[in-house]
Image (cartoon, rainbow, N blue to C red; front, side):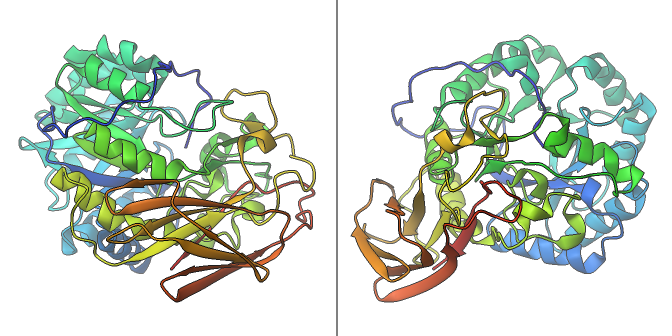
Length: 444
């Protein structure tokens, strides 16, 4: 989840690609996905098994378990998660949600101690890895947690402090996680300025870089949701001042290219299952969709975003974009209506922005194709075809964009005679009465 904070952003020019350097903070290049335990009330072991197997198949090493203090299902779900992960040689670590709930020192110590011996608990230098979502005002309590647990490897997300502020807390931490994985308000693409600032501020301590495919949250209705989930819903839906879209037309490609430039110790993909913010990389699990978000989530599959992960993760770990391709193919993502087909629903362009979200996205189909050499691709919308060349290439990944050009109909992507077809683009306003800025993703 993203908190309404004015995180400090250092607006530096786009970094020039540099030679890959060894990780600074003692990490061994691992990739995790942010998993919302607050959405798992009543979840079965089979669902945990499915999520873990799918994540492993994409090259993901583990889940960062976002956990709130008040959820009555924590005991059951954390045990299921850790047991299932241990059986599948998959790593987990606790990420204490300090923004949406209140934790006591004893609660944190108890959870860390309960799972620090689990076979699936991520450890660094023999210490359990622990993180947060925000909570810099809780900073002075971590010394007590270290004492009460026999020490931890502590890599919090204190993004509300900005990189300089995090750099002022080095005596308390072993590294830092930068939640900033989306362009700023009124900016169409990201730079690596904030990543560079974090690495500099950390002075050699571990850097965990946030990577996300998408961000959009819109209006919903939480009134019929259980009280225990209301904590999560209050953060996740824009009737509580959350109604924005962050430019994502090229984000999934841009951010992985930046990973290869920055070479962080760790990566955290934001997110596995936060449907209310459209940042998910699996297909929606109905029981996990917060009330109101179904209007922009149902029918908008995202699992195809994972297609490029085995390649990019292998390249990141190897420090070389010329690694062997697991398979050739592509992922394409797009909205199913033009951005101005009807009202924007009050959705603004970026966190803290004021301009309409319609100005922060183009009417395009975006594509990342993986092949041993760049190729032209053909995209048809309702039978009208366009053949395009890559706009950019890194290693064996090429990026393309194809404009709607006023066309409507099913979308078909063809490369080397192989095709896939996705949901149609239409000029009809969604039933919500405003544009759905979420994307659908399809795989070739």
